[in-house]
Image (cartoon, rainbow, N blue to C red; front, side, top):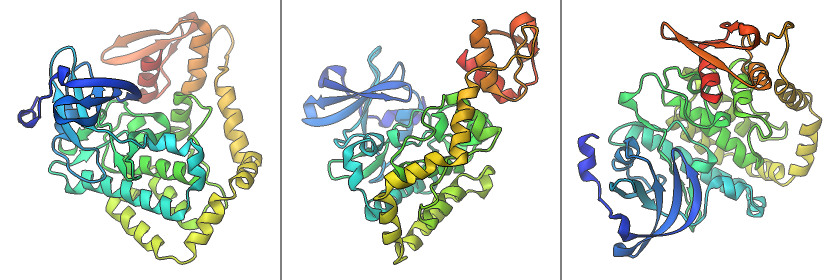
Length: 367
């Protein structure tokens, strides 16, 4: 661990009284707890070991980033202690009846808060940080509904970043993250666009699809979440820019903030946005009848079944989901490493080496 660890407030495990489990974060479970000596309610993320997350959090200070209090460094009770956000996650809020009360002002405020927090990470923090797992579950609400970005278990200092392993959650992941390619700060811009889509639609991205189906659609087919036709054009345009396949074509968060600032001055936008938000039943029905959504759902179902080429052989080419359906149906997946490369065999000992490297690794990780 770097010298930054010397700045940690080291909290004793016995100084914490644990209450309920608040759910899982990256690489650990999160609990609500009472920090006895400080008489303070906190969140504790239990870990198998302390790595870069505490190091990253200890260097950050921003109103839209979860506040770091210290770390428990006693084996086997490692943990990270942060402020407790009593409002739960943004994901939970968007799934609740409360979200039906959302209006354009609320969405704009939250969109700005997330963008400000991300701009700080990329451009203003003492050491620049790429989050890599920005999603609604990793954004929490304080009691007064201020949003804070949390869970830095997948994050990296930008100066240390070259190639990344696959981390994060597929529906929110940029194509280059899915493929373990070199990443830049705009991989977080892609994820931000998905969170913005969540706030506007109050739906789960790629609901009903398995993670690797999403990966195949996003990378191989360059599919993106469907934006309802009645969505205000300025919001739709911003999401599309965030989802560009080429990372350099996506806006950085300074540009996102500039776009949101311009949008906030548009006198027509509140009426457009509120009309869209309050007519969800109508555009949900329209979307359900849309060819693109029907194709997506039907394609998702077909991917689960696998595809036979005869003679007991199942081959992928570039379709990871068909391959997964095949090897699962066969009951086994045999993997072999040769010269630093990984090959996969299906029935009849047929080497499936026509898949792209990222798909091979995804299959290896999920078999």
